[in-house]
Length: 303
Image: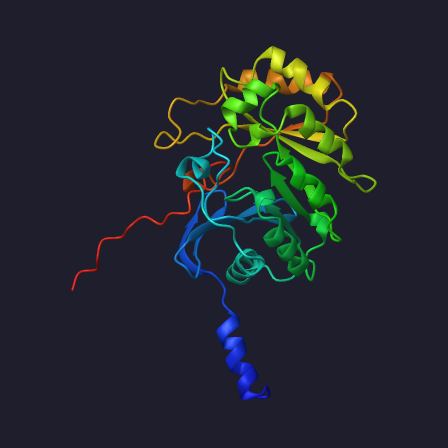
């Protein structure tokens, strides 16, 4: 910017950075889902996913390089904690996806369901939402949390408030403590109360995400308890069949279709709005709970 004074340019160069994440790897699944490994300035790698939907494309962004929550059904958690991303680094993922996939001007949803726990990074998420608001309405932005209770209220105070999704995955406190170690610091009753207090505009609901694990949280009793827990809260329930990874998530399996259907039917009979979310991008490890933030080492090129 040669129209700025030289001294000011020197200060800006010292204190600021203008750079998007670097594309380290791109993998495309047969269903059109495309996963990007993106390298940040310090060498950290995060993953972001472009998911084609009917009439609208969904961009799944990461908020942290790693995750400290440690959910037993998630590869990111199995690989351990990392640092928070800045608002610029989060928004940079969006810029890269939109540019490389020619999505400028296309109808988009943005979901913070990639690597990390968004509500452990409220400053980064808040700044990214402000930047996204130039082109994406907050009504098209969803922040998913494992249940960081104090931060749910902070999210609800943002001037541009996104949709809220809560990864519940259990119907008792003991069950959540086994499945989601960090999230279990907050009692299930307190989490439900935070959801009741979250400010919702007319017509909006909280999305309840429930990863189904065979023999663990898919019983008939779980299906009966869940509607009782959610009574009085405007919600829609997404049942997510577990996406296996034998390397990082051994010993877990997906319920069969009959069990999933019976569970969903039980919720519907209790007047819950319920859908089964069959994940896209399984072939490239781009589905729910599969993001790693690692690029496979390549052998050196031959001379």
